[in-house]
Amino acid sequence: MKEKIRQINEEIDRLVAENHEHLEQLRIRFLSKKGLIPALFADFRNVAPEQRKEIGQALNSLKQKAAEKIVSLKDHLEQGSTAEASESDLSRPAEEINIGSRHPLSLVRNRIISIFQNIGFNISDGPEMEDDWHNFSALNFPPEHPARDMQDTFFIEKADDYKKQVALRTHTSSVQVRMMETTEPPIRTLSPGRVFRNEAISARSHCIFHQVEGLYVDKSVSFADLKQILYYFAMEMFGEETKIRFRPSYFPFTEPSAEMDISCILCKGEGCNVCKYTGWLEIMGCGMVDPAVLKNCGIDPEVYSGYAFGMGIERIAMMIYSVRDIRYFFENDQRFLKQFTSAY
Image (cartoon, rainbow, N blue to C red; front, side, top):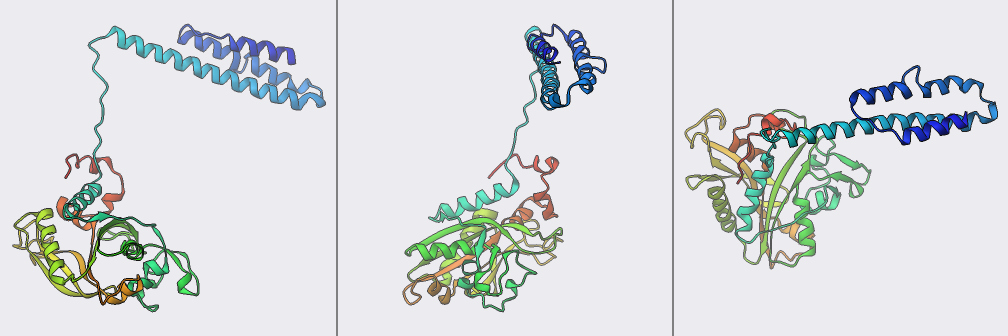
């Protein structure tokens, strides 16, 4: 049995297939039901018990080697046929090359970043898994705040002591905390990134989305500075005819706080079903950094002040591209993505 296995091994090493018909003959000779290797398996029952382990392993290796050799010969024949056809038929059309494009969220993200980089903002990044201090406590979220509830947050480690909890970040404000802790003012930074909230997935909301948050901390920063910078952003992003308005709001980490609306970019403020016939679309929250947040991050609120703002990239992309379902951005449907071949 060992000698037969050795002989077939050597024969397989020397195999060469002249064409597909010859290759099929080789396959039948070695691997068909009546081939050489299945015949050896049939004789395996006559092998002495003390040799069965060794002979069995050798047979399995032989069968695998023969199968791989057949596949290798087939690939070689097919490659040769393709090369021969290419060389002989000079009129044969070239293979189609699919041109890729950036994801619509990347297009909008890059445009937002570019606008703020032009006026001196740098880019900062941080971890997506955050401790309680950077995600909540430093930002003035009291222990009883509903955002700490598991209905809103994906907790990685849910501890009885909220200070020991670890969660997927619910906003990129955590990056701003890290910047304020490690950077001496003036600070002018933009924090784009992916965030997570435990929400039901629908056409208008998702448990994963993307934000861009901005922060400016320096001496004598005022709400007027914030308004001017956001006027500039709105005109650069949506056009010079864009109008904006501010509505009072509440965020734990800013005081005073506001929501910012722009005139509807689809109906130009006249009213449509997208803006619910109000002529306005909400795009971001903003406000002056709460002195308590500055103090938590080691910045003297008696010397420095600052403003912050944050917007959802999906919300702006849905406005610009008239996308009615946020889930399209996450499904990787080529029919949807191929529409975005031009870029900001």
